Image 1: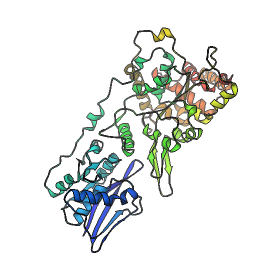
Image 2: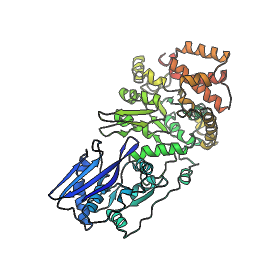
Image 3: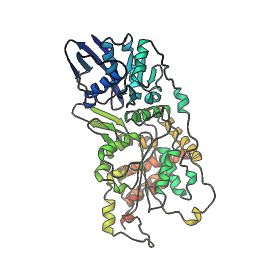
Image 4: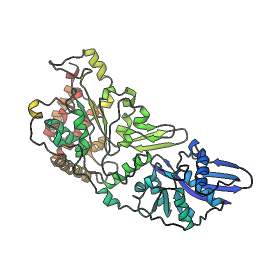
Length: 511
């Protein structure tokens, strides 16, 4: 007897429906075809034990299972439940009258209980697109899949619950989530707040500008100056995610299997990988490509602490995703693209010893050591960072001051207002949402300068020997400063402030 049942495979952040055909005939054998990987090939042992432990049997006949399209590589253990239900229906142990109207996915334990799967949200989106009535999946994943409306999403704990549903013996209520209600559960009291930071007013200003325009920023300062403390508080002043951004971000975390008992993500991600990270872990990849840290930080913040300690080749692979805001991973038979539109926040000591131009420093570095340390970061990578700012240690008077600093919520209001100005400006441009994403053409259009500003910028370019890319960065940052003031045009004092934020372009660094 031949039975067709439906599962799904995830490539990148999109799903593809898989038709599982189960045929039971005379003879003996278990044949699984359609490019399954080892995890799927091993499923026969899990399925046999799960069926036996629930009062069913794996038929002692010739079982042929085809996973179509047969030329598409299938991976993972999430097809266990699909195959088990297909075998039961094909061997007439259970009824399956409406089985072709559902997507069924789940990893089986030997007792028939279900383990969570990856990519439940993209699978649910695809199921709705293709007109399926419902989706059966492990209970641990039900919240992320239930975000999709007009699809019956059933979270099940074991094999028997699915069998009872199709046999008409038990009822399972589909899980429904009000996406908008879930989305608007925002935290107005962030865990890390700028009110905890004493002093550092100029750095807070820099952070506000970076957040308002989505600019990449690097903090340079000695140990203990507060670089990490400031970076961790940056997400608390970023504007709240839009529903579209929340869905995009949730999709990536779903594919990576990082969503456990969580529905829609409404907080911007903050990723802080260790400097021993590999290329593949940072940008994504592997024999079965998975999203890397830069994609996990999509619509949020990627914090690279102690930037020169990262391997140079690891930092270099990040150059293209920083520019294109997506990363494409190519293999012989397929190519996947992951979005990676993140804010890069990096921190570094100004020298190997951590102290630079400090007469009271316990140790200093020679010019040769300094040069070698700075050479770990390439010029092209620094060019892609819009704001360079020096962080100096906070004096005792400021540390012991009892007055409360400005809170993240107050700063976020100004940032959100500036972002709204940018949203209106780029309304007709689907790929641009804030100033940092502007191309050269848009910079010419939206950052037109008067003669005074041009002269100021020309002098700075000549004296600091800035590249053409640095010129564009200065104009983008100046446009953001103008937006924070709700000014229509970029004028000289906006340019002057933006030029201050190119510390690493100055010759004084290696004096």
